[in-house]
Amino acid sequence: MIEVYDLAGANSLRFSPFCSRTKATLRYKGLDYTTIPIRFCDKDKLAFSKQDRVPVIRDDDTVVSDSWRIAEYLEDHYPEAKLFPGPGMKEACRFFNLYIDNTFHPALFPVVVYDIFEKIEPVDRAYFRENREARLGATLEDIAARRDDFRPRLKSVLADLEAVALGHEYLFEVLTYADFSLFGTLTWVTRVSDEPLFDAAPSLARWWDRMQARFEI
Ligand SMILES: N[C@@H](CCC(=O)N[C@@H](CS)C(=O)NCC(=O)O)C(=O)O
Image (cartoon, rainbow, N blue to C red; front, side, top):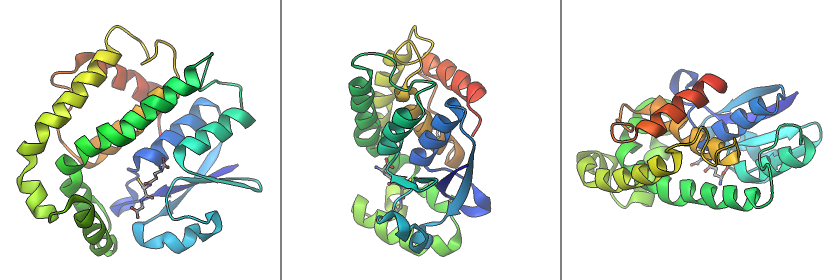
């Protein structure tokens, strides 16, 4: 059985966007897995992977970290249900995955960061505050007070995603890893925050419902 080292918040809430990508991919490929909860302060438990981020998977003697590298590993070793079903799909998925990480996440982060802070274990809060305040260049409270300033950028990314979802059952018409990239992020936000995402994105909302019905994680 594959082990997934998975970020855990208070009450065992699992909200990491990157871990959700990996878990949904494992479901899609029909692979059994078990999760090992990791809190922000548990990094020593990841020493075997020679880095300090989740997800990490252990598949017998093989250890892989980073959600994109895990996707490549699973596709190479368990090719049955394809993540990259056809020429150019891997490259397109890679680009979409980078868009999610480098454009969608930064647009979301200041809007929901205080919600995340409230959902993590008290023991993780000092680390999270210090690390995220350094990243954002302001206190979490200041960022939360300015949510409205950050919403237009988020709205514009959601409009891009709505345009991609419009008229398609899956983002690239057939299911690909791009669907799991976005699925991970929406799992994250909807589990930690009540921020409305779908008011101006009805196709994205239908895609999200379809993905949730198909992949329970
Ligand atoms: N590029 C990595 C990013 C992994 C990552 O940043 N994971 C977060 C959890 S969502 C983490 O481990 N954070 C630990 C920390 O911030 O100290 C991936 O795709 O897996």
